[in-house]
Image 1 (spheres, rainbow, N blue to C red):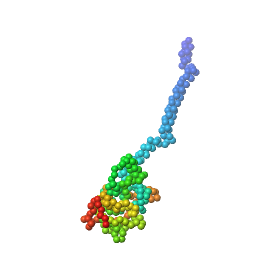
Image 2 (image 1 turned 90 degrees about the vertical axis):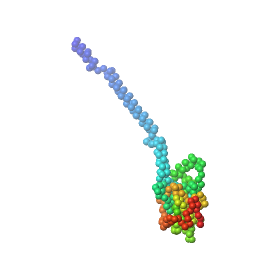
Image 3 (image 1 turned 45 degrees about the horizontal axis):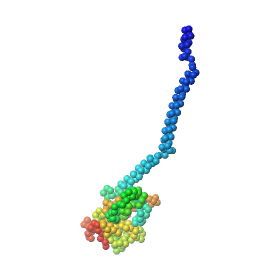
Length: 291
């Protein structure tokens, strides 16, 4: 009996129950399959979600919009402080600048104490000198136009002009001498930058430029409305130095004309104005004398 009893007690631990073994094996296996399926399902959902947000690895429209806005903001900052694109709308500066040229105006050229010099091609705000000061009738439209102009995508405002500096503060500018030439401080200026066949001026004048003012003219004299046309206007055709936007240094477009704006040595021999002023006396700011 002892042997039988021992056998009976030993039976459950040593004998194998097929049904029990099946249950034991299937249970964990089923659990593992369920866990694996859930994990793979979650992974598939995440992958599908990511794919729907950024299909084929392409950036989302939000990212594209943000990058575009950042680029525009950067260009506007550069345009405002460093170099501004400027579209040439007229023939007044031919052959130096042609209609449709997009130039880059160096806004740092006169920012650190330097001032415009004779021969420089400058862009300036003609409000108060070339045009009357008028309030903006459409502020929103004006803002959009200014933004497009700042990026070189639209014509500049009607108050912006590009001309060549011919006389600076204290200079006496006369046209024309007996040979039909322009003189500055009594020295003949040979203007090789003019359109071939153009005379220095069909309008005679004899002016003394007031301090902190500029006398400016276009290179295509017969097609340019410049200081000569505003002798009787407030300011006498003189542009205040602080109205200068910057110096035209580069032609950026079209690519076939990609180059720097050529300088000139036409004024190298012109002496500084006399310390006591010219014999005709200094011009009164806001007026100009015509010969």
